[in-house]
Amino acid sequence: MAKAALAPRPTRRDATREAILAAGLHCFGRDGFRRTALERVATEAGVSRAAVYLHFANKEELFRALVDDLHARALSEATAAARGDGPLADRLTAVMVAKTARFFDLLRASDHAQEFLDENHRLCGEISTAFAAKHARLLARMIATAAAAGEISLATVGASATQVAELLLDTAEGIKTRNRTLLSSDAYRRRLGDVRAADEA
Image (cartoon, rainbow, N blue to C red; front, side, top):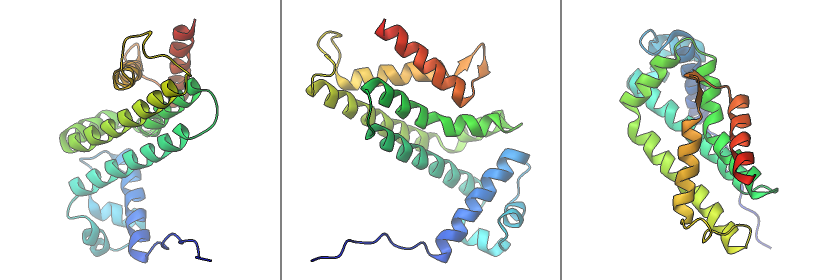
């Protein structure tokens, strides 16, 4: 009988990188991008400056890695939500919340949210675009599967699964703010629920 494959154990290098990313997130959130130096990140992570520079050549590279990591975690959570039990509407809501809740919590907790957003646009545009496309494909697969199972009818709305997924994402993007104020992840979830209830009425 073949043995089940075991997941590789994290190496010390992996653990150090994770510690640096966590410290970078803390420092960027507390001090802002411009005021954060890699030396300060090293102190926060409890590692040497050399260890930080072994992983990241500069803070721009660290910031990009951090954004990539946040997106990857969000996509993982969204994928798990998509595979969960429950009604399709609840799973779709959970997928969209997973896509944004982590970022909402980060921005709400920082006095430097606008700077974080500015640097994200400047440094990480293609990263965000790539992950947005992955989220759209995930939603489209969910909708197509539901249509094939007879849970929903795409013919009645005259749209493809991809078009419906894009519409849902556009709606979710549009309700991120209320009266120009960034919503909390809890408020965002409630707003998505309100939109879903209106659609179902």
